[in-house]
Structure formats: structure tokens, C-alpha cells
Length: 292
Ligand code: HEC
Image 1 (tube, rainbow, N blue to C red):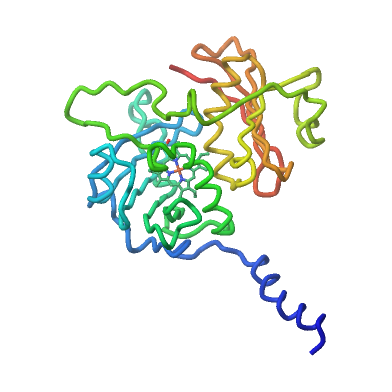
Image 2: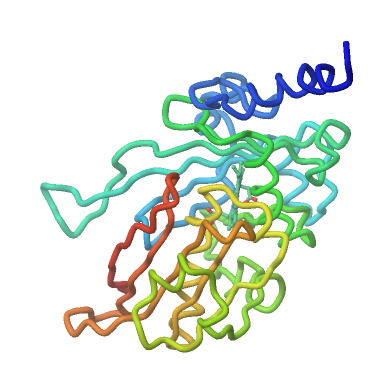
């Protein structure tokens, strides 16, 4: 076999792999959904969170060893520690519209500690499943690297964002509890002239500069979920500087822009417009008013 043929043969499986659709599997990065199915009934609840922009309720659970480590304040999670989170759609109760009720599972996320197996992602294996416990189309290793790039922002907490919340005692949640405020996420001013055409074409005319999220690792490791997760942080930056805030992947194709807009009907902490690229790299826009 000559060298070119050898190369071709060696490359074939790679090409086949890149065309593969990763959706619909019941395990990701060696983590099986079935193994942890039903975690909300078996494990203690660590905390709840609510995403205002997507109206998604999130409940985080931990198995015994992860919970003990978290409660002790330690960050060296032993192998076998698992955190599991479920995102739940919410909507109004049609019978009593000022009350918001759960409207079904949106997704499940898992973090499983195995220092050896997941050495390249800080010892945590990451997996994401839809409401049927099936994977999404994205390439699992790329997704896992994106999960890790964000979770590594809280390296000082063992890559775990959640803090235990007491459902019995009167607890005051510390402000800035994401720990991102003065540490990990960095913004700087960027002239719009320096941005790629896709972003320039999306922004309304006349904007000379914006707030630019500059963390290189996060920009290098992006999956669709990164864009969603960053929206509230971009919103906060956009609000405090009254300027658009942008997260742009290093591929210069995937991005989210959150921009404050004037809306007299919006009483609350402000009206915003978001443009976020979808799986086909099309910038989809959405307007919303935040209440609090
Ligand atoms: C851009 C940031 C970001 C990305 C990307 C991200 N996460 Fe998270 N993750 C968070 C934040 C913030 C929390 C805290 C809970 C919340 O706000 O929902 C969290 C919480 C979690 C938890 C509960 C344990 C903890 O750390 O609090 C799990 C499990 C989890 N994420 C899994 C994943 C998986 C799996 C992926 C990738 C498929 C992923 N995350 C990607 C930011 C991110």
C-alpha cells in the first residue's frame, strides 16, 4: 500500500465520525442516563435556581459522597461523587395565572467524578440528556470540554457551582453566589469595527463599542448550551454599562448579544433584546422584559 492510500484508510473512520449524529444515545462520555435515572427521588436536593430569561427552574441533587464533601466545605471530591441537575420548563397555572407551575422536564445534566478517566476535564465527566434521557446531536467530547471550560471558573470550589441551601433554617444566600462577580468572567470594551461581519450585520447601526466577554477558554470551548448559560451574565453586564454585551466563540461564528432597549411598558429592571446563533448559525432574536 502506498503512503497516500495508508493515509486515506487512516482518515476514513475520522470522516465517518465527524458526519455522525450523536443524538438519541442513552449514554454520553461513558455516563449512562439509566444508571442515574430517578435521582430526584433518591438523592438530597442541594439547591434550586431559576433562569429568568428562559423561565427554567433548575434543581440540583447530589449523591451521598458528593453531598458530604460539599457540606464539609472540601473541594477534593472523591471518585464516585455525582451531581445531577434537572431543568424544568415553567408556565402560568391557567386556573390562577399569577402562580407559576412546572410544565415538564427540559433536560438532565450529570457530573461524575473519576479522576483517572476524566483527567483532561478536571476529573469530572460531564453528560447532558433530553427529557427522554437521550443525548443531543452535538459531539460529546466538544460538549464536555465546553462544560468544563465554564465549570473551571469555580475551580476554587472543585468546579462545582452549587452551594447547599437549607430548606429548614432561615438562610440568607450570599450575594454574588455564583462566585463570578469579581473573579472569573472578564469583560472589556471592544470597538464594533473590529468585530466579524456576522456580528456587525446583526447589531443595529450606530453602535461604536460594546462589552466583550474576553475569557479565552470559554470562547474556545463552546456548545449550544454555553450560549444559553451566558445570557444572564451578559444581561447583567449590558444593564450595568447600558451597552450591548457580546460573547463570541473563537470560530467567529457562534455568538450571543444582549442589548438594553427602551420599552416604556416594561416596569422592572429593564427591557432587553437578544440575538443568539442557533445550530444552523442563524442569529435568532428575542425581546424580553425583566421583572423583579
Ligand atoms: C457557561 C457556563 C456553563 C456551562 C457551559 C455548563 N454549566 Fe453546568 N452549571 C453552570 C452554573 C452557573 C451552574 C449552577 C446552577 C445553575 O445556575 O443552574 C451549573 C450547575 C451544574 C450542575 C450541578 C452541580 C454544580 O456545579 O452546581 C451540573 C451537574 C452541571 N452544571 C452539568 C453541566 C454539564 C453536563 C454541562 C455541559 C453539557 C454544563 N454543566 C455546562 C454553568 C455552566
